[in-house]
Length: 207
Length: 248
Image (cartoon, rainbow over all chains, first blue to last red; front, top):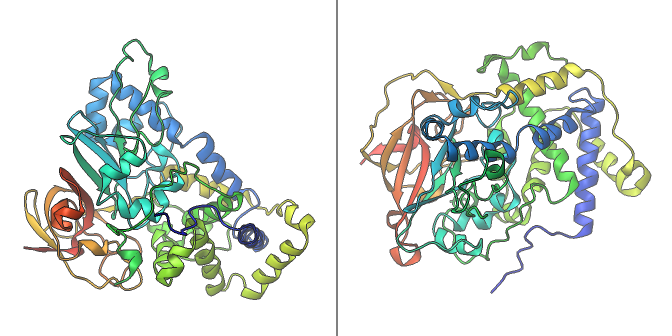
């Protein structure tokens, strides 16, 4: 039976207060010379335009068509990412040490951070809210098959599930399986099929 | 045992809410940006990899701020508060408290400014002050692009090797820990010894902070939970600092 747990939607008063407090804090920090009036906007813009799941999507698409690149990606994720024609930053903040794990017909991988929300920023950007929610963090380590079914992914009993938690300094993500029926697609078309959820292991890639 | 250190495997929770937005309220973007700026301006970056000339950055921020500081704020909460507050609400409380504790702002200033925005919707909707020195933003961008690698030379050889069976120590987590509490006392297999050593920057009372080996450990789900309460064909992996591991 569902509980009274509020999920993500809270009362208007509570949000109005948080909004006023966040703005009060930011305006004081600007006045006191800690940050500038542009600092926060520039950070947000960096994740909107330069470091986001659109990078991960291109990397996965390349790995699907280039076996040498895929081998390097699995062996040394950062070295492979540095080969991409992306803006500087693929080994930047929260991407200093990344690893990717490959889904196959026999093994399905899913990532989690039970203690907080560790996430590979350069390849996937910032984590979606469900990943930060204690409900996902608590449940996926113990009953991932059930959790995946709630995301709409049904796995055969024979498929082994590997859950990758990140309590130290490695940032994990998932190389999903290339779907059937994509043989004639270009890398750009393949990249368009990818979602953050597919690169976290809670979705499969669909044509 | 603190509940927020023992999330892994809690039972009786709700179905997943697959909210894919990164921020569910606009104000959350602001506190995320403030935290990231603090990371980029932290005073420890003069000894980081790469080394930043942080002393010459014209910010008034002179403190040490890492993920450890942010996480300690959340992990230090009363457990029921931890679950009452949404993710970025914890950040807003912890970061505001830090600026007050470090003397950059006062509680009265923050409360007065907040009240002003709550009472006057014109002020609340007005643009933020401009601020000045763009060299602050240059450092923030440099940090985003170049990062702050925790990898260091190995101070002494790693104690364990691939294939070893190890046990997770029963350490007391105190205010902040990088050990999920539900792993304590459990047996795992070393599947990878990461090259080099890793600092955590922030010294925790339970023993991490200085550079030490980190291991990728594999736990059989049935070594963590009763078989009837978990699933078949499941392996749980985690990267664990050496301070948390002992020989079986």
